[in-house]
Image 1 (cartoon, rainbow, N blue to C red):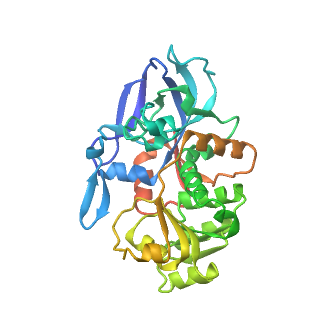
Image 2: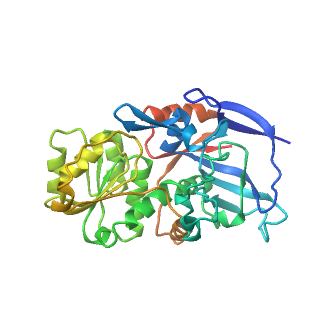
Image 3: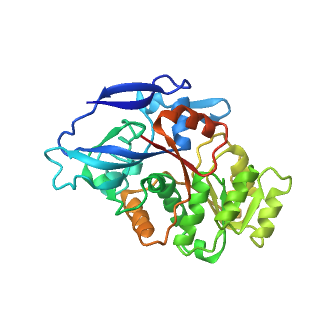
Length: 352
């Protein structure tokens, strides 16, 4: 039996439709029939083939061990159709979301449950084929979280947008309950961050974005305020909205302009968590960090426990995933271009 895969075969070129035999799961592997596969900005970076390090420097994804051809998408929901002989008890027919941030299983990070920080990652849609296909192989059933009747398309973004924002927001600790979090970027992750803050009982979000439509979407989702990042007085607006300066800033863009704006708008003792990978660099006077004092921290995706917690919150009705736009898998290239040109509000999910 054959299946379709939409693969990156050459960086920066249209995804190619590749037909191949449906894989048979070996060992502990589980085969999923894909029900929904989300599209993420990280997919754009993989498609482009590099990260922008600023100053004309680039980090080649080939240098990180990413090999082509590769089926994109790490936000995967599928129906379990077959399992390898060593997979143990697996519920055939169950619909589950896959935790894509898979590690080697043996290093210190993996033993801590932080496979997303493994130095030898095996992530779905990045190091091994992902969900832009009719079927996908998951290496072990422990990476599958049963959806219990949740809508596959709306649940798919939990595997990245959900995990990533949940993990990042938890780094602020009690601050999310004491004051608004300034969320820079009102795309799919920004809208998810608003919902995660609600689920955590947070104070709320002040959203910053260059796109008026995305700011309107953030306000409709419950943001306290929405500020134009390109306004000449954007930093002043953030300072006024936070009552003297932001103490918790979540940068979901991660560009020179956004980090610079965040630092300008920060109060003393502020905590800045950077998630976005748009790229660039900054020049920062070192005495500023201890004198203000500032905490600048990176956050990368999330853990399997994070995904389990998110699914539980969603099943309990405490977390409402943002509305997604569904498109047929055959429109993978059109969806990728729409995201590239900033025409997507929220999250796009492809359905085979």
